[in-house]
Image 1 (tube, helix red, strand yellow):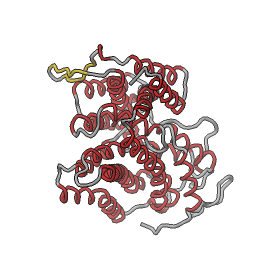
Image 2: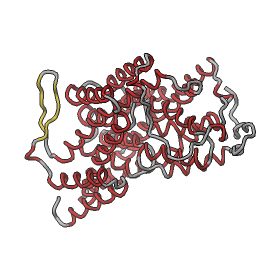
Image 3: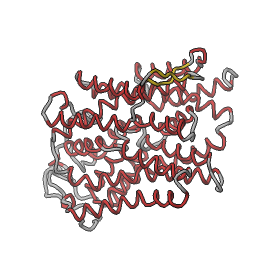
Image 4: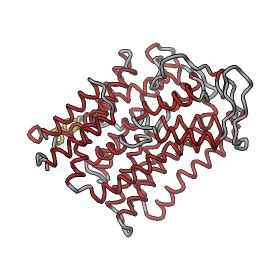
Length: 470
């Protein structure tokens, strides 16, 4: 691959086109975006669109959406991968590493700090009360995600049926999330390839309204960048380097500590998640929560909600909640290390194996995706996966609701059907009231996530200080 340059080769002069952007200038722009990236993928993508398309005019509307659609098809956080993709387009690999790395950095620092506070002070009454309130808002945020994505994705009966089937299979039958996504993608791919109208409904989080910024008016223009012409040799070298960065640490841990050590389990489990986290954080969190709670015993059900509350109130991808899961898993099984040191290493390990693959998908796939425009099979796969993700996120919302509002559940088994049923007498009336209030505020009155999180947290603290809750 061509050597990395600090300046993107200037495009041919055209009306309204900006001048070349130095890597140093781009660094500050990406740092600004990373620091303001609250609100989940929809808000983060909207922020990038406003800054990069409308303000800076580095990239045009059609190219932005083309990159977004590819990132929506990938496992992992689409907003972080979109930043990596555009950084790569602007300044090659170095630009992609800077854009994608900075997108993660503020959230990584914030979640690690909150994990320390949670581990040290989480049993204090007022801290527990704060997270009690957070859970209500998190439930509302997840339900809002179901409504938002369903409104965009379920445009016909085929998409609605796929969402319903995904929900039934994962909630009542326990079919693994990765298998559901794989089958949905295959159905959509072949449906789109055959030209079936039901699979040509598009995807993505939507672009900003107003005048479209044409590709020809931007720095990147319409031409294919020179570094997007990747040879087979370059592709092999890219794959070897990033696969080594990802998997060599995992192999070392397994060989050194054994497969049953907590660090080996964190490395292998989250490496697996990195390959199957289609549809963003909400889609995979139910699966992660169930495995972390029921199989590995790293967390209690309510603690997963606490971690998601942390991720919702800090900048960066929501999938950063996995760092909290890794932290708590190692914190509770430190071995010969101190619990806080083990937790810190466990959290950083989870982050490493979650995000390194994202760079692999972009640096290896983006050069080829740049050549694809309007591919019907790819659009069909995206549509089907997005529809299935609606059902998966609904499963997450119900799982969260059960463990937020009820203090006890009982397992139900009948043939292939298996699920947890809440014990009605164990309902927590204050958790129910806070949750309903947060849901009405966000879905009916369109109150933002941050104000809702702040209000429910303060309500939780107030209930504790007045002695209503323990």
